[in-house]
Length: 128
Image 1 (tube, helix red, strand yellow):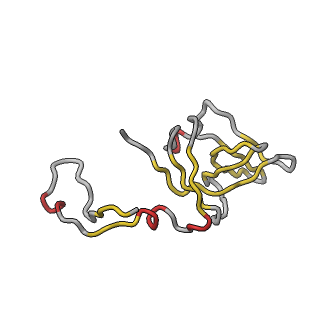
Image 2 (cartoon, one colour; image 1 turned 90 degrees about the vertical axis):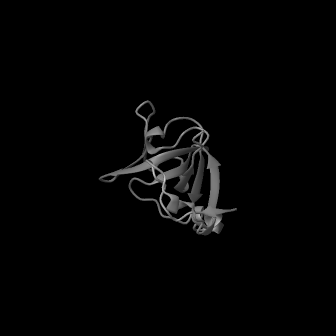
Image 3 (cartoon, rainbow, N blue to C red; image 1 turned 180 degrees about the vertical axis):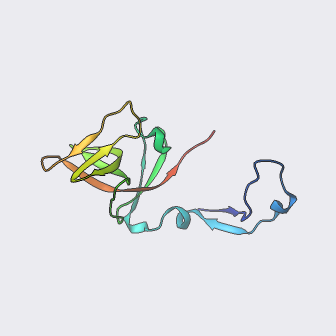
């Protein structure tokens, strides 16, 4: 998908006539997806990640080639069900946390049936 690209910033006050000049095109695939062979898109459902800016209905771009680290937002399989959570590391303990205090967190241990599918790299969110 290609769209018009304006390199000037968007003014939140009075518009500038200098911003009327088109600079070219941007390929959204190249902008949104760094590793096409390792990337998939899922739709968020629910509100457990609201403080991370992820709302129900948002599209999440997920890269399987990136290694998870502390504070990564991931798509994880917990007992066979997919969820979006934030990885938290505390000492030797690992957690999958919600970014909404109304939802619980999951401690990862050797008995946990958890698989990390990938890292959320972008969120596509409708604003209208």
